Length: 123
Image 1 (tube, rainbow, N blue to C red):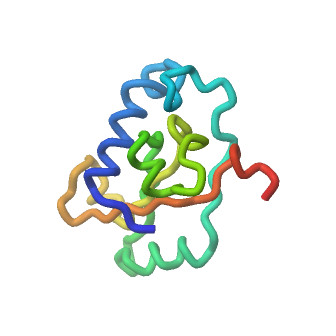
Image 2: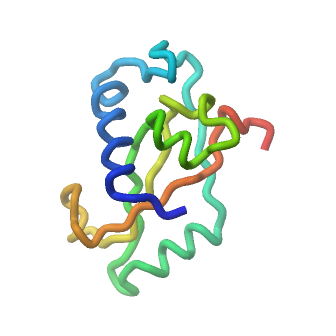
């Protein structure tokens, strides 16, 4: 699922303020998450679709560590958003190593909506 640059930046900002600084992530009620994400799964088709957008010779995928905000959890997981707020996730972007030195390349596209555990540990 393609996401907006604005959503990506909000997710990365939440991650930067909390987990990246060594603090626990916060859920919707601002409580510490004590059972954080174990894994994030992206199916082959999703990964291939993203790879197909990258350069054929030097292209690849950049994986950003991020955290669901209240808004992005609601948008990306409307069936149970409260279970995602504050959980770590990956945002993927087709790019090249040379172009991936920073954040905010106006040409960069962002993708999310992998299945994660929790809450999908039975998958």
